[in-house]
Amino acid sequence: MTPTPSRRTFLAGTALATLTLTATAAPADATGARPTWPTVFPLPDGWLPEGIAIGGKPYAYLGSRANGGIYRTDLRTGEGTVLHAGGTGQIAVGLKLDHDGLLYVAGSTGVARVIDSRTGELLTTHQLTAPTGHFINDVTLLGGRAWFTDSRDAVLYGVPRGGRTGGIRALPLTGDWTQLPDVNNANGIVDTPDGRALIVVKSTPGELHKVNLRTGLTTKITLVGQENVVNGDGLYRIGRTLYVVQNRLNLVSVWTLDRTSTTATLTRTITSPDFDVPTTAARYGNRLYLVNARFTSPQTPETTFTGVAVSL
Image 1 (cartoon, rainbow, N blue to C red):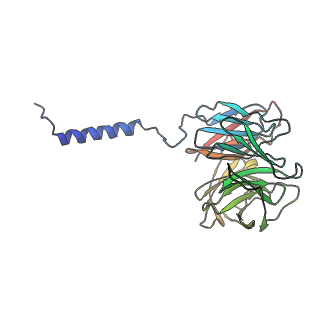
Image 2 (image 1 turned 60 degrees about the horizontal axis):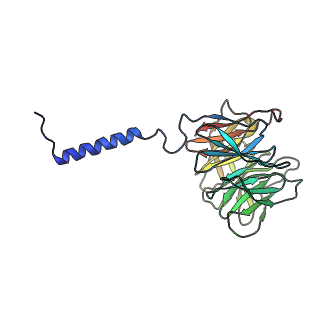
Image 3 (image 1 turned 60 degrees about the vertical axis):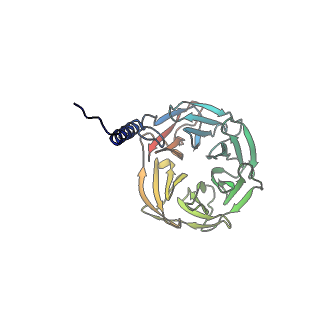
């Protein structure tokens, strides 16, 4: 005969079964990208991508140097569609997506644009500089402003975010910063872990700089484990870990920042056979997503382009 279980034994067994079922049913990675999601996905031929932005949902936004358009890709399937058509003479390079759905776009020819990521509508165009002699290259979000780099001038530009008031702020770079002629200087940009300053990569000769937001005073960050970050392009930061995309080297160097963000120590590098001059990076879940700009290949309307995911 099978003895009748007590109420305490029955409830304990039921709870254990429920916990076991829940643990079994949980996805392998509940925080983000699953292993079955594509690691390479196509972009339209001739798109000429350079910037990528990802928010809290599994969608990547990729800008076009051909016409300033924005392409949106579903990271779960790799399928995408043109969100914003752009126009003749427009360029979209660095991108950042805000929590309110606004997409901030570095426009190269002296402009910064704000686009609604849900509808693709162009909301605002900010004229930061003259159209020629400047290269508005990348952007990050910090405090009440979106901060843009100019690769051909030693100035950062702060544009008010969302419905915030205030004009455009120009922040000249001083201190350890030396502007070099006829090459790209300031490129990728992120905030420091404490949110009090900015970090800018100087593509030539390959330096990282910490920028004081009040004064523009820059301090060259000491690199440990590697002499420079030459061809440094996009930056991405998770805590005190800084990812530097070194485009023509086809790698991402990974650095640990010290408490004051004045020293960076190389911890590893990330490479992939799918890299073809990656430029910028964004994160979703346990993956870093990059775009292949293919600068060493013909840049024609028939040239194929892809986005690539690598594990963090």
